[in-house]
Length: 345
Length: 272
Image 1 (spheres, helix red, strand yellow):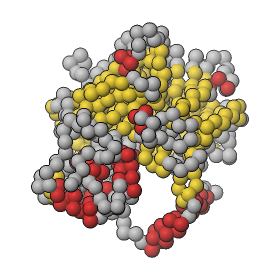
Image 2 (tube, each protein chain N blue to C red; image 1 turned 120 degrees about the vertical axis):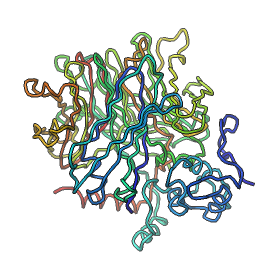
Image 3 (cartoon, rainbow over the protein chains, first blue to last red; image 1 turned 180 degrees about the vertical axis):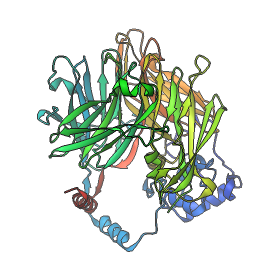
Image 4 (cartoon, rainbow over the protein chains, first blue to last red; image 1 turned 60 degrees about the vertical axis):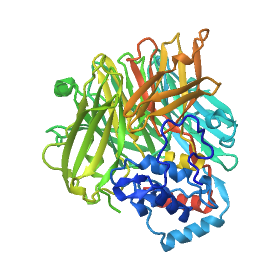
C-alpha cells in the first residue's frame, strides 16, 4: 500500500493532497500516471530526483506537476530504501552517465574515512555610527521537536581590522539546542564615530557526522533606527561579477564592502556606471581598490552630479574584476546612516 | 547537456515600494552555451489569485553581445493602498525551444525596491521549484521546514518584522511559525497564487519590549518565504528583505579522498 504522507510528516494539516489514485495523471504533458510513476520509483529505488525527471521526462515541460513529483518521490515506499538513504542529484544539472574517472572516484570515496568538512565564511564588520554587529550560530532541532538536530559544532571567529590585523579571536562549541551570539563590532576601533569596516572569518566544523540543520552562521547589524541580517558565505574566486542598483543620491548611500580573504595583496577593479539604455556601450569610470592581506575596504558608489545628473532614478550596473579570494557585499543606507540593509554579491 | 529554459523564479512585490528588475546583459550571456541565441524573458505579476500583468522582453545575443537595444528593465509601480502584497514570476526561455542554455539553474539577480524618500533595499529571487537544498531536505527529513535565526523585535527601538509567505502554486496551503522558545502561530492559510504577510509583533507578550530569537516555519506544501525587517510603527518603511534558509539536509562530513581532491584542485586553479 502506498504511503501518502511521508513517515515524519504531520498529516493533520495537509490542505490539499496531491494525486492519490494510481490511475490519476500526475504529469499530463507526458501521460504519466501516479501508478506508473510509483512503479518506476520502486523499480529504481535509489534514483535521484533529477535523474528521474531526465528519464521519465515528467516535470520537464510545463513544470506544473513538479511539487507532486517531489511529494511522491519522498512518499513512495521503496523496498530497502528509506528516504534518508536516497542519492542526491543536484536539480537543474542533468547528471551524465558515470564515466570511468567518476566511477573510480566513487569507488575510492566509498572506502575512504569520513572527515568533517571545514566551512569557512567571511563577512564585513561595521563600526561607528552607533552600530552594533553580531555573529549568530544557532543549532536547533527540526521544528524544536528534539529529534533531528545537527551535531555539536566547533565555531571559531577571527575579527580583523581594515588592515588585516587580528583584533579578536573566539572559540566556542555550539551544542545541540544551543545558540551563540557574539558582538564583533566592539572589538574594532571607531574613528571619530564614522562608519568603518573590518572583517570576521567564521570557521566551523562538526564534531561528529550528521546533517547541517540550522547551523549556517548569520550576522545582524543593529543601527540606531533599524536592523538587518544576512547569512554568511564562503569567499569567492570569481574573476568578474556584476551588481545593479538605482542611482538615488538624495535618498540613499550605497557602499560596497570588499574583503581580501587571502594572505597576499589584492586589487579589485570596479567599473561603473554601466548603463542599460542606449549608452550601454559608453565608457564607465574605473576605480582600483587595494586591499592588504586579510584587509577590508568600504567603497561608496558615487557619481559626479555634473556628469551624471541625467541618471538619477535609473538603473546602473557595476562590474568588478579581481584575481584572488575575496568577498563583496553591498550596503544600502539612509543618508544619515541610521538604517542599513546588507546583501552578498 | 544544453537546455531550452531556466527554472522560473519568484520575487516579492511588497506594498509601499516600486520594484525594478534590471538584468546585466553579461549575466545572461554567461549562461548561453555558444553566447548566441534569442532569449525571451517572461514577467507575470500575481495578486490575490489573479494574474495582473504579463510582459515579455526578447533579447538577441550574438557571441555574447546584445544586438540592438539593450535589455529593457521591468518596472512595477507600487499600488498601495490597494495592494496587499503580490509577487513577480520570471521565466526565461529560448525562442522556439532551442537548446541554448548551459543548464536549468535560474539566473540569480537582485530585485531593487525603491520609493522616493526611502532608502532602497534589494532581495534575491527564489526558485519556484527545484532548489537543491529543498530537494535534499525533503529527501532527508520528509518535511518542508525553513528557518530564520535573526528575528529581533523591539518596541523601544521600533524594530518590527514580518514573514511573507508567497504561494505561487495552484493549491492552497497552511503554514505555521514556531519560535525557539515555544511561541506558535499555527495554520496560517495562504491561498493559491497569493501572498500572506504575518507580522511577528504578535509574538511579543504584552509585558515584553524586546525579543531576539530564531523561528522555523513549516507548511503543507512548498512555499516561498521572506523575512522583512521594518519599522514597527510603519511596516511600509522596510530596511531589509531576506529569504529564509531551509533546515539543511546536507552532510557535515565527506570522504577524505574527496577533500584531498578538492584541495588539489584549488591549488592547481589558484592564480600565480
